[in-house]
Image 1 (cartoon, rainbow, N blue to C red):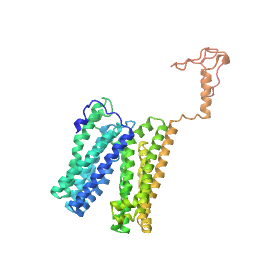
Image 2 (cartoon, rainbow, N blue to C red):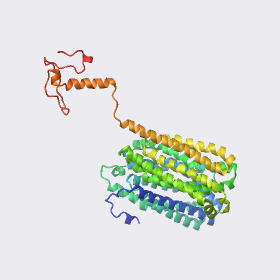
Image 3 (cartoon, helix red, strand yellow):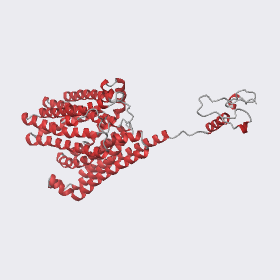
Image 4 (spheres, rainbow, N blue to C red):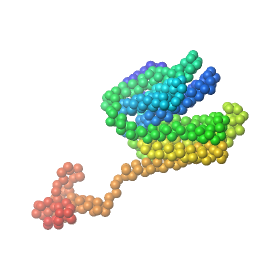
Length: 497
């Protein structure tokens, strides 16, 4: 498989258009989501609800930890248009993050009071997520080089391989631990046989003095420390972002019970699916956004942002119209008559998804603008606002209140993200504009020009040929006695005549 794709390792693959990159990324995301759903189906049909709960709990525990230690390095690398860091720095920092993630996962499994069986399941899930995180930073290299489709194809391959490994191991052993080990083995096979081979091709095809060609030398600890300070805000963002989908579920379970959670979660999948499509668009456009911000005129950057916002709004509008027109029969077909009665919740969720889609597009714009430090405050504030709204609205309005809370919180994040993007653009515009001269600067520069280039018919003395601007050592103005004139008479006394 990889050999056919890597026919000529000496030729650097040409960059891909945003449209084709978006199509490939969306296909990879959809395939991965279907395969993850297939794992849950295997657990439910051939295992038990308890085993499905073990799988879900292990995923819930390990995902925030790995997201935090990953620090969003893929997005930082993809938008590093100035090549401030090299591949060895990103890859080395990701390895350190993976080791830290395994340590944190082991600590949680040991100190959390879990049964030995469940603790081993958590550890196995942590190892599988670390393998996935290692491939993720390689995808950042592909995005940085304008070939996001390579990473999307890896995701497309990883899903079936992980599903096959999970199914084979679980159906033979009937043990969730070995099923997760098989899932991680499938991901590791793609990492070695496809992703690392493509990475080697990019490194070999680079010039000897380029950023990628020096990757084999490894990243310096000082550079990795600096990179960690740059990327840490995105790691902090991962915590409230991963908790945002859980907050309404927790409040609903506490107020309305587990039955209401069973009604809300399947409806919320439509919200998540709509936002995942916009995330695929942001991944495809992130590198080009950063390049246009650094090298291109601001109008090009604004034009690309406007297109992303238009597509995000269109995706959200399709979801809202679909929920209004065909929501009830679709819910009856997929989940049954009981869910069809909750069509109003679906409509509110899709309206909230429309706002969340716009905010996601601006989120990628903030990362491209290197506006990273504000993001932890933005998303922590959004998570706290969502928690407060759920506590107030769920007891008052039930499931529609939870959907409304999601919409209001997304609106607040959208306003804050728009303000951050506008501020960054204004700061760049001010920094690139020529400095304004004050009155003293204007008078001084005028006096300087008058003394150095005074017209002979005005002065009546001196050389009749003014010194050239390109002359590295211009001749000094002299008076009728041959004495050099003072450059600034006000500082050194009156000129001699």
